[in-house]
Length: 135
Length: 389
Image (cartoon, rainbow over all chains, first blue to last red; front, side):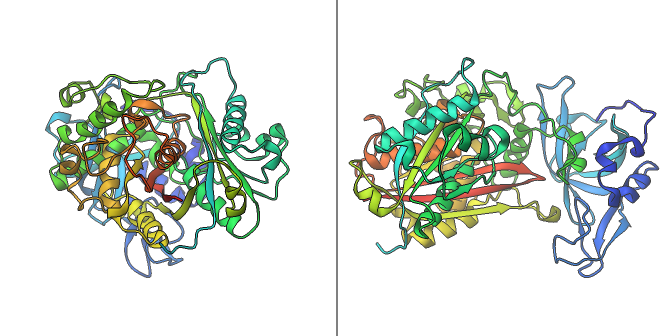
């Protein structure tokens, strides 16, 4: 994820627009809010967002605002890329683990288990994606 | 031994090429088909079942079936990445047991090498049709990056070291020196591996498999036809398949689908882990071998590092001779899909046709195990157990 700002929005983004049922997420992420889908039956959050709960099969899932807190579950530094970047799994405070990037920090200081906070970065296509940086 | 298997592998062929800019993927498939049929002493007219995966031109069976002009009663285009061909063996055995076909042909071919594909280190270009893509594509996830995260987590949970991972590559290279077709025939040391450049931390260049053009094919048939063929008979006695999902984000990435497929295959075969004389274990990265060894039960979870560091994978020396052709790490990884070559070397071992320097004595029962694809982040997996009859 780069720091470049783009004039587009998620409404221009084929990856967002192919999934009309996820538009609430992209609307929120454009204003810096992080939504996760939570099941009304088992009350668990899941990732990536679905219309069926992948944990209990429940058909009622709601968007809930997440705390934005997470811990670093694992990561890999893509040292051959220019510039190098950090691919990571982070465990959200709400439970699920998601794939993401760690940004704006000294990668050599990263440690599995450390506390992270969400930020949003815009894709060239238009939608804003959650990324994380150390607290 | 008591098991219900009613199908045999009677033909196996690994294409000799590792670089084929002068051939189409279709031609490579056809050459592999003819090679395996010749190995079995059968002709293309005998084939009534056909199995292929996403590497086939058109990503399904129809184009190759037309090209080869096969007259079929059964076909299967199951696409599950690198382990597709192992799952095809399972599906072929089932179809043959039920009498739906008698001679099943399974083919694989591809040419990522001559196409200059950055198989593991560049994000793959995909559209929005898969639901997880919208959520992970912008992070520039690569195959090598995901396996780097797996390795890092395994190190964190179990204390596994880069030197232990390197022992997997060392074993592969010791075997590959005897394989004149292998891409990397030089025997390497632990130091060579850990001093090679980092690709995706903590994985080094020599923790990764080779990129090759080529392919392979297998022939599966019924007991009646197998008895008419003058080749050592290799019986399919246990099989398993699964998709290890991303489980809504509640993942245990250090655990592979081998936990499930190993259970299925061993239960069906009615053999114990101690009876396995040889194992082909898909080695796209060194860490994947470690995790499957643990999940299949060759050692306890978390002990894979110690198991490989003791030299247990080296034929003639260790407890579990493994990937004696040099595997994907040194020999061949056609079309970026390792399941086919894993099956072929297991068949060679059971027939006594592996290179004499790596042939396992009295090799009567062998196992092949491998993952396929990386999805959000889960994977497919298959385990196959074979017996020489």
